[in-house]
Length: 97
Image 1 (spheres, rainbow, N blue to C red):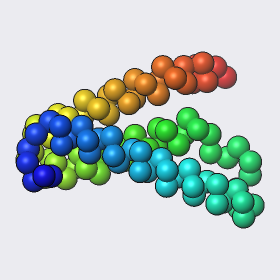
Image 2 (image 1 turned 30 degrees about the horizontal axis):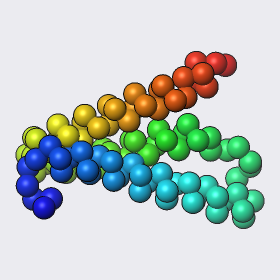
Image 3 (image 1 turned 60 degrees about the horizontal axis):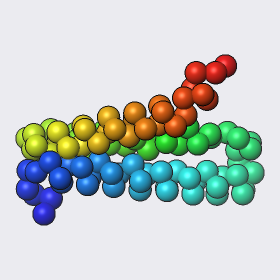
């Protein structure tokens, strides 16, 4: 399935990577807080969301190397939508001091 060069493959990959990385980072944050290795409030939800979306660089790089342009369009489109959603959701927090 992932060997095909289709936009839907890029969209699914573009959704899967941020969700998986968010869960990993959130659980890692919880574990570090539990063990008192970081102070409370060290990683805000905004930071976790942004880092999760940045994880789309990994599959995008592999699509570029494999010359799968249609899949790359899908991952780029979903990444832009995720970034727009983060900006809209956290607008007040991002624009305030």
